[in-house]
Length: 444
Image 1 (cartoon, rainbow, N blue to C red):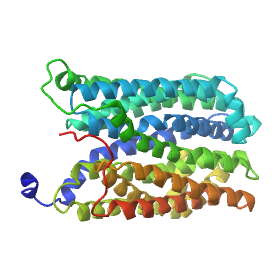
Image 2: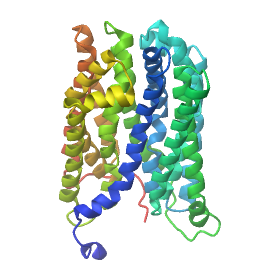
Image 3: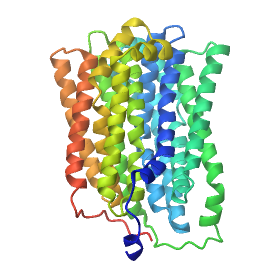
Image 4: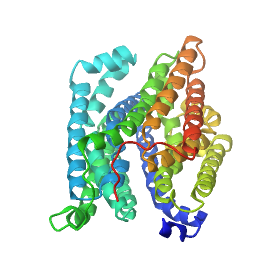
C-alpha cells in the first residue's frame, strides 16, 4: 500500500502506451475477415459463398466461446508452477471438448437440427456451410492454446509478442486466401474457412514458441516462483462467468443470422451482414483491448477518472471513424474498392453502417466496466449482463421478423440497443466503491 501511495497519478500517455500494442493486435485481427470477404467477392457465386462462409465462421466462433477468456484467466492466475499445471490441464480439456462439439456439428445429424431446422438456413447454403464447419475442425483448439500461452506472455511483460503473433496469423490467413484464389479452384467457403483455420494454427504455434523460455524459467523444475495453490474449483469459478459471457455474446451472430434467414430475401441479407459486421468489428476492435489496460492500471492513484476518460475517448474516435466511412465517399471506397461487393450489397451495408455509428461508444463503456470488474475478480456480473443483452437482442429481432421490418436495419438497431443495455447494467456495478470479489484465492 505504501508503494502504491508514492506512485505518480496515472496519465493518458501511460495508458496509451499500454493500450497501443494490444489495440494494434485487435485491429489486425479485425482486418482478417474483410480481407477474406474481399477474396470471396471476386470468386464465382460470390453472394452464396460469402453468406455460407459467414454462417460457418459464426457457428465455429460460437463453439470457440469457452476458450476465449483463457487469455484473461491465464494472465491473472498463472503465478507459479502448480498454477500453470492446473491451467494447462484445464486448457487441454477445453481443447478436446470444443473439438468434439465442432466434429458433431460438422459430421452428425446435429448439423441439420441446428442449421437447417433451428436457424432456418436456405437449402442452397446447407452444403457449403457444412463443408466450412468441417474445415474449421481445429479452430477452437488452436485458439485455446494460443490464448493460454499469450496470457503467460502478458503476465511476464512480453505483450509485444502478442502483436507479433497477430501479424503471423494475418500473413498466414491472407497468404492462404490469396494462394487458393489464384492457384486453385477451391470454392469460396473452402478458401475462407481454410484461411481462418491455418491463420490461427500458425499463431498458436508462434505463441507456443515465443512463450517457451518463460514457461521453462518460471514454471519449470528450477522455478523460484511461489504462489498459493490454485484449486480446480477456484479456477472454474473464476473462468465460467467469463466463458458464459463470451458464449452468450457469440450467440448474437447466429441469432442475427437466424433472423436474417427469415427475411424476404434471405440470401442477400445473409451476404450483406458479414460485410457490414466486418466493418463493425474494425470500428470496435480498438475498444476490445481496454479491459486488459484497465486491469493493468486500476490500482494506481486517480486511475478510474483517467481510465474512464481514455476509454470514452477511444470509443468516440472509433464512432467518428465509422461515421466517416458511412456518411462520406469513403463508403464507396471501402465497400466497392476494398471489399469488392456489388451495388446492392454495398448499399445495404452502407445503410446499416449509418445506423450503427453509436456501437463503438457503447462498446467502450462495456469494456471499461468489464475491466474494472475483472480486476476485482468479480466476474459473475458479466455473465448476467450478457444474458440481458442477448434477451434484448432476441426481443428486438423477433419483433422485426413478426412485423416484417427491413432486416439489416432491424439487426443493427437490435445490436445497438442490446449493447447499450449491457453498458448501463455493468456501469452501475463497476463504478460502485465496494464490490464483493469472486471466490478465487489471492495470488501474490
